[in-house]
Amino acid sequence: MTTAIVLLCILAALLELDTTYVGQLSFSRPIIAGPLFGLITGDIMAGIQVGVFTELLFADISPLGGIIPPSGVMCAAIPMILYSLGIELYFGFFLGVIAGIAYGQLDKWMRKARFKWMVFLEKNATARPGAFSRTVIMLIISAFLLNLIFISVCAWVCTQLMYNIVAYIPLKMYAAFKFAYMAVPWIGLATLIPAFRLKTR
Image (cartoon, rainbow, N blue to C red; front, side, top):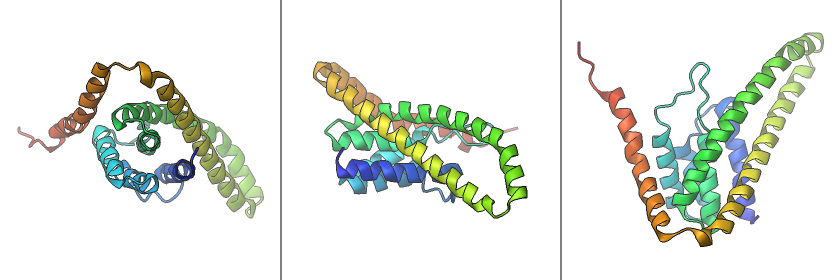
């Protein structure tokens, strides 16, 4: 991995903490994360495009109740990593969507695992109040490391996949993926139309 990719993976792992663990200041929104990734890889316009497309694609999925949406950070990070290695954005974008959905499932598992620890943590905090801060810090660090491992493994797998199949992809497949990629914002906008439609009695 290049230095830029390593930095991007670290930034992605940190930004993912913003979704639930630390801050929740919306830095993990794709429209913000995408340009940041673009700054690291040297193509901010590509980062803006990926961020906007990802934002529109998942615009109608809100993290309310038990709904855990796909990770916008992972969706934006994977295509920017692949793009910095010479893989077209329209291939990397859809691999990023798969990675984002996979992280959503991992996050669901992590939340269930954390719930089982809550009873133990509450007893520990009651018995030793001074250990509470240390426990919270350890949980945040462990979440960061898990995010970093996930994004690094996804980046490696997607890179190896594309390098091994890119020579066998027919030209028509390039055109199909490019068309599908350019249709993403329109699909996203179409899902928002019902939300803005005036309700009639």
